[in-house]
Image (cartoon, rainbow, N blue to C red; front, side, top):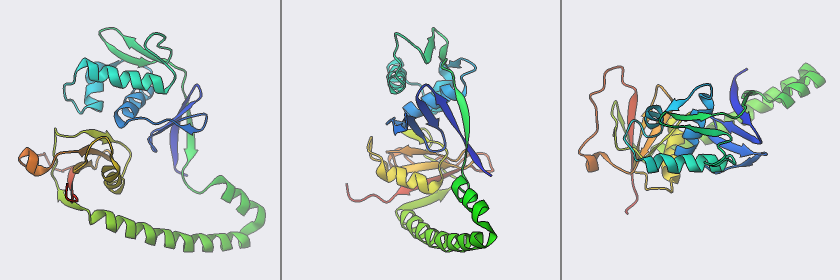
Length: 239
């Protein structure tokens, strides 16, 4: 059965697939770049993560000021109850990089059929299971129909350009998402006006941008094949 990994430390749970941080079961709000920084450090806790790698992952290789990194680091520490003086969980290695030094446990969580359903089937037998399966099939059909309609409505709000990207003009990146998730994220973005996004097929990630092909003088299309980027331009309401 498919599983996903959740990182546990102190009273926190960091879930990469859902891009969430929980403390004692309650959500902790994080900006996307702060979440990516925390996840990068937790996933690579066995080593020091150098500044260059942080720039590559968080800012797509763009050069940023020390103040920008310090701001994201301060927010990450604050979210997990740490600070620059104690450095109990996130330690700064002078002139080198950062390292997560807290004790982390990895927990695998099933993403398929719930354990409660499986236990119920075992208890009441194959005939009851048949009824459950039939009901589940009907419910799944209804759910798929609703999801299809919602996705069609989302797609109608974007113009798709395959094998192209707005490369270098992105504001923020989301990981472990599909293209419909990215469409929703772009529409719901509040930190800036999201006008387009690039979807990276190989990593199931998307880069949201406040720019358009017109505002930067055209999309980048000279990637080596097989192409891994698709560009989606949002059909904006009149601004």
